[in-house]
Amino acid sequence: MKKIMAILLVMTLAVTMTIPAMALDGGTVGKYTPTVDGDKDEAYGESYTFGIFDQDGTTRGEGFWSTHGEPETDTDANIWFLWDDTYLYAFVDVLQAEVLNIGDDHILTHENPWEANSVELWLDWGGFGRVKTSVEPLHNRTWGDGDEFEDIEPNTKKVAKLTATGWSAEFAVAVPASFLVSGGEITVSLQVNVWDGEGSIPIGSQGFDTPLTLGDPIIIAVPEPEPEPEPEAPAAVEEAPAVAAPAPAPAPAPAPKTGDGASALFVLMGLAAGIFAVRKTINVKTNSAR
Image 1: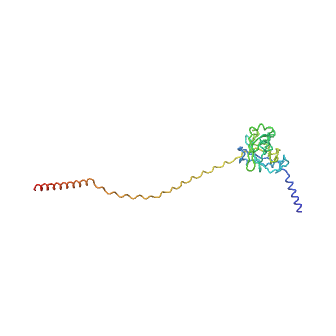
Image 2: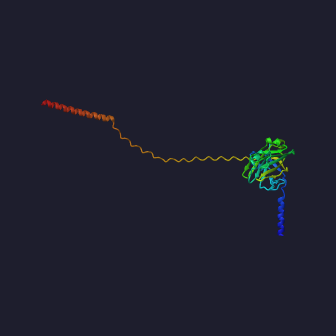
Image 3: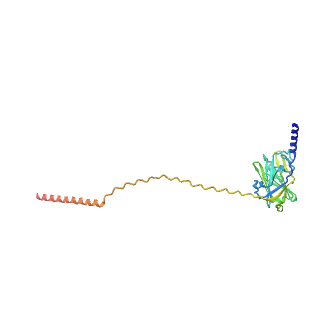
């Protein structure tokens, strides 16, 4: 009994793995104007998205064709959408372990170098015909075709670049303004071409079974500015150590009074002169007596 159950389980898993993903119901695309630079704006995360293997007719890990006969691939991709009064925007994140170069000459000279690693975004609005618009990441080469491609291409913006997980592509498709209205519908499909070093493997879908409904604006809150840092308190100034006041210099000895000294000198000189005169008189008298 256990063996029978195990066999039934294996058979069930095998059948499940071979069933392709069901068609997408589509979704509502938010209105917002991103910057078309190959980086994913925050608003994309608030809008409609799907994975490339979610589309009808796809099997995860396999392409729908291969130029060398082996359609298996480890490449995956996801797409997000936005819109405004001028463009339908799409951001594609291609998850690829190694982005190989089919050759610069092939990419730059072929009119439709789809065999290189590239994204093909297919669109249809109003049932007037399909448009394919493409871009690749190594040279940012752009191309496309379709009934209205020549009309929209001059105003369409496309950019692709390498990323840490593979590469990204961003589109601003100049859909006619009459179709870019709230409640309008545009049908899309996504195809990613993988150059694996041996040949090319297209993955995704060529069917137009994913309708987008253009919806309400997306409001992205502006982050509040960070508070300005508190001004730092001024550093404390260390007080210089107190210096003892110098001891007062001793008072100079009083100088002798000039007037008193002169008087004493004159007195002495007078006494000396008197003594000299007396002695002279005595000497004269003595000499006369002789």
